Amino acid sequence: MIAAHVSRRYARALLELGEASQNLDSLVDEMSRVAQAYETSEELRSVGDNPNVALAAKKAILGDLCQKLGLGATAKNTVMLLGDRRRLRLLPEIATLLREMNDSKKGLVRVEVTVAASLSDGFYTRLQGTLETITKKRVILDRKQDPALIGGVVLRIGDMVLDSSLKTRLEGLKNALLPN
Image (cartoon, rainbow, N blue to C red):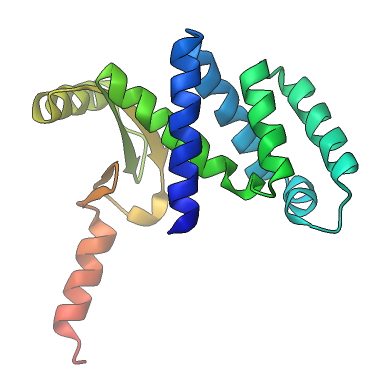
């Protein structure tokens, strides 16, 4: 609960800084890249979260990371501040919240669409149109594939999940037929 509140405050501050400097979109992209690097690197997470690692060593590692990712001053300063305060673990959530806040300002909504097998572009175009009519916002589809679904579609819009997959329906049928 506290971490979510802290992450939201950092994201809001970044949003304001990005708007003031008129580079919000690039800041969102930079924070997403550094968050992805943090999530995918076990070594970076272990250094970032370890209080036994000297602050100077941690700053050197983070500085190199920021340089390799080509981060601007605002993103770099944020990463360094999070490192100083031992809050690097918040990076992924901060980046996600920042993207959501930016999308909301633009009237966008991101929808994660998970299907069992690849579908035609026409399906995605019709789905996007339907979702734009329902949400009255511009929709960006993030396509994913999961063969375990067997069939059907799972839509994730923010915190809401619409699951019409065959896997879920079969599990529901199994639960209904089998005695507790």
